[in-house]
Image (tube, rainbow, N blue to C red):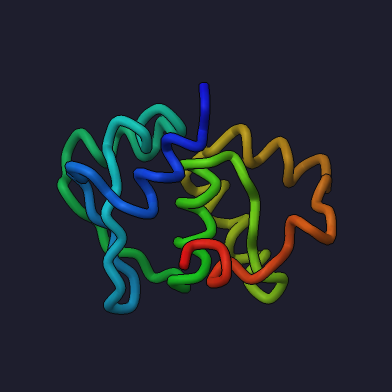
Length: 116
């Protein structure tokens, strides 16, 4: 699968059908992609059109970037909160990376510079 296509959907959402809000910031998403990446998100998306989280917007932005592109970019200060969200959402591909502690210095960069 060419994840570049999904990156474009993240940057310019076409026909989003799910919204995740955190601290007043809304992120438009696609249920089918979220469900494909996480059984927890699949269950949530079946029953709701939106959810609200008590997570840093930078954490959610980084998580969505991973879900849409398979690229991991998270600020070091938010790494623990990011790991917790990965566990809560049971994102197995990401948990494997975390468990292997395979973060490189290039993996931990400001996510705000990625999605602009």
